[in-house]
Length: 507
Image (cartoon, rainbow, N blue to C red; front, side, top):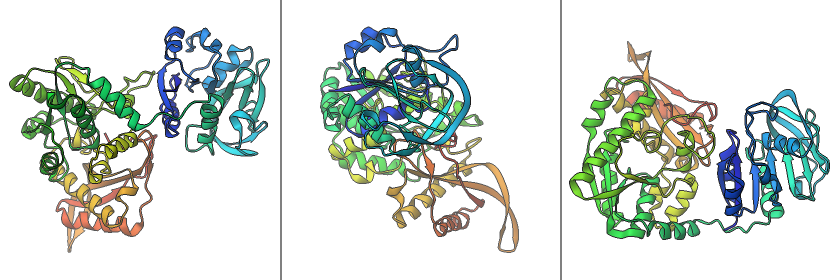
């Protein structure tokens, strides 16, 4: 399989480079910037991309790749900080500049190779404080903006390119085409990254593991697909356990049990641990502590079950790449955004080995696999649901009344989106409840009740998201239903923050 390796220098967009490249059926992998030349050479990549990052090349502690990587005689594309690395390495000069953040008009000076077919100019997304003052010998300027005279450079002899803007973000017009030019035309990769191929490779790898596997299934698409892949590979050595933690959607515990028993021929057990979870979370308000507690309690249930039922060696989970990135344990220098119960939330005392067959995939790739495996559309098109459940949608302490409000409000949101034929057109939709209260009027009486927040977002891979512009009449209908049907709710608000700077879940 042809591969593109992305060296991660700490950009918030590093993962998006891989994501965009995979969209045109080429495998891309994010690796640390300090990967050794020998290790990289062993992987035999068709091309290398240097990501952006917050550093300056002239800083004492600036991250640099191993020098030999520049001499591998394979195409290299540097983005933002990666662009400055190329300028600095080949004898140019980088200088401090006025910070440029946002959209700029990129004028194309040479429309061959990297910028082939892009046109005379495009809007490009800038996010930098340094720029190339002098380009290296043997390079030419192929694109410029008003503030960056060398916004795109090329050494066609070496097939090395540097761009000051970010083609991986949606704000750059034809950014995907620029990446496609590099990957398909310059690197001449074969488009052989398919989910059918991933399934075959996963089956081959999973079939070699020894011992029994305990798989925690939540009813969501990620853990379900992980379980089905493992079951295909090792058969009855897999045991699926569903833990009702009391933090699920309305009536979800019954729906999940029915789905697994009717649709999938796997060994399935349901464990009701709702009282234990809610007891452990009593009085806890800090979101990170909630996530850690939920993760640790899950593992306690799994571990106890494993000891009582069989000698299990593995604990399988449906961890995805965005979970790994946000938990700060990716291959690059990512910061912790929040711990996910199935990655950063796992305790040190866990005595089962972790098996995560989907940890390098994005949500839409998992949905493609689900379709191939014959998972019902109702399941694989269902909106994502956080592993810690409503613990992260209830702001502050989790109480029975807030839990009920969150469950019923979210069900109303989902039902109304389905009725309006919008449910499958948005990425995620739910209601959150906090401690804030507001005055309302019921009949002729003043009432002091809770505020419910509605959150609906559009996304492709959950790494970035934009708030959904729902029709006003639909918002009105949702609001009226929530305030009429839930006794202690007086106000309904709508969240209009995108990711970044916000996250999709409130905690």
